[in-house]
Structure formats: C-alpha cells, structure tokens
Image 1 (spheres, helix red, strand yellow):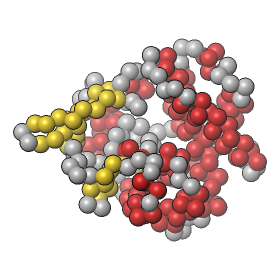
Image 2 (image 1 turned 135 degrees about the vertical axis):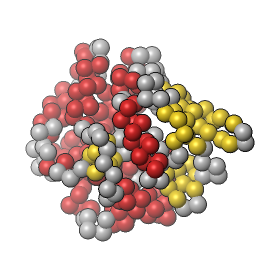
Image 3 (image 1 turned 60 degrees about the horizontal axis):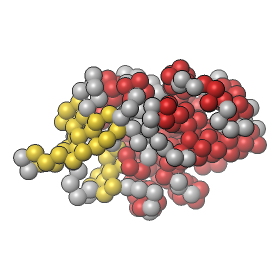
Amino acid sequence: MTNKNYLLHVDNEKYVLRLPGVMTSNLISRHYEMNNSILMSQAEFNVETIYFNADNGIKITKFLEKGINFNHNNIHQYEYLSLISKELYKLHHSDIQFNNEFNVFETFQQYFDLLKDKNGFFCFNKNIQLIYEFFLKISKNNSFYNIKCPCHNDLVPENILMKNNKLFFIDWEYSGMNAPLFDVAAFFLESRIPEEKQKYFLAHYDHHLDFENSRMEILFHQFTQDVLWFLWTLIKEENNETFENYASIRINRAYELMKELMKNGFI
C-alpha cells in the first residue's frame, strides 16, 4: 500500500525494485529502514538487500524464486502459524539492536502534524473524539513497553515469505525497537487470526505466555495500530491516493477494541 514494486530480470537473475509511494519520505525514515533492512538481511530474517538509497527510498532486493507468498487465506494453516511464531520469537530474542525505536504514540503525533485537514479527522465520525481522548489517556501507560526488542511493526501477511520452510520478513519500513507483543498483535490483526488459532500461535511463540493474561496487552496494541493506520490513510488520501473504505474499517474496529478494553477495566 505504500510503494510500487517491479520484477527485474538481469543476467538470468530476478530482483525486486521498490519505488516509494506518495508522502513516504515524510512518513518513514529511510535511513533507519536501510540500516534495519541490511541488519535483517545479514541475520537472514530478511531477503538479500542488493541496493538501498536512503535519500530517495529506492531499494532492490533479491527475488525469492519459487517461494510462498502469504495471504489471508493460506496463512491460517497450523503448520505456517507454528513456523511464523517460532521465527518471530527468534527475531525478538536475538541480540540485534536497532538504532531507533518505534513508538506508536510519537509516530501518531508526527503523522497528526502532517495532516492538513485536522477538522476532517475530528469530524470523521461520531466516535472519533472518544477514540482520540482514549488514545491520549493510554499513551501514559508505559507498562507494556518495559521490554523492547527488534520488531518489524507491520506484519501483514504479504510481508512474510517462505521458501523451503525458511521464513523471511520483508519491508522493514516501520521497524524499530518495540514491545514484542506489538508484532504479535499486528500479526493477529492483519492476518485476521481467529481466537483459537491465536492461542495456538502464542503457545508456540512462547509457552510461558498465557493467552488470557496477554489478551489485554494484545488488544491495547491492536487499538493503537488501528488508530495510527487510520490517520496514515487520511494523510495518504489528502495526497490523492484512494483506499476506498479502509479508513472507516480501521477506526470502526478501533472503537470496538476501545469498548472491549474499557469493559475489562482498562482505565
């Protein structure tokens, strides 16, 4: 949704050329992305990075021949959930240190400053003011961020590839040090993982983690993610990109997540 990708054929080899989309230089630090992408390639969590221009965001990576591209349908298989959970745990418990942190609340403020039509944000629907106030309140809750590790922070199914049972996480645009369950929450949300399979995933990710005890933190992160990507969509649409009802889906779900958090005594 952020960029345009092209398949290149050069000297019997295949590569993927990434051309950045509108406004991406304001939304993303390409210098952090470059550093993190290269680190992840060296650690074999990412496909091979051939070229990266941090000034304009143009990137070339090695094409994964005969690999599996994940989507909302095939990613739900138990075999894949087990593999992804273990690879994500391995990433989170590696000794890799990124030079930057991804803070969802600071990123929201950065994006909000970029938004020209602030009135359009606050008038988007009848619940937006409540959502915004709740978002600001929970920004003071630091208990979920005591432990930080290298995180991808944008684990949509399309950012996970597999070849010969080896997984690769690609597109490290939003990567940074963050709470490990932020990644887990994003994976559940973006891949539409049902609850029984969330329990399965979490048990294989870390058997010490209890789903019920982790559920509020997962919902907390998912709420913040939906609010952030809602705002991201408004900015992109101000710059002549169209996402149909994507913003509505995000903010309506954020409202339901907020109600669930409040029902369980969160704030």
